[in-house]
Length: 79
Image (tube, rainbow, N blue to C red; front, top):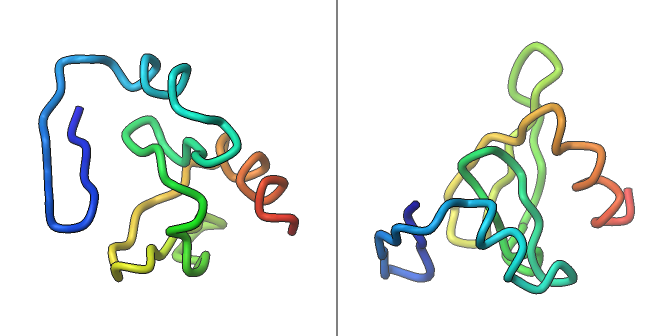
């Protein structure tokens, strides 16, 4: 598991499910099996291909959104 914030990157030995359970659900959302994102860092959501989307963070990083995570993400963002 890699944890990134700002320019810092850390490798942790915990599974993503651990962080999903311990992070404040009001501040974070899981967008993919490899990504948990701080909601306030989401700049936009863009379509990519075949009905899939990606999230664009305020840092400019683009990350995929899984089809199974997309409905919750839309709800959390008030779409």
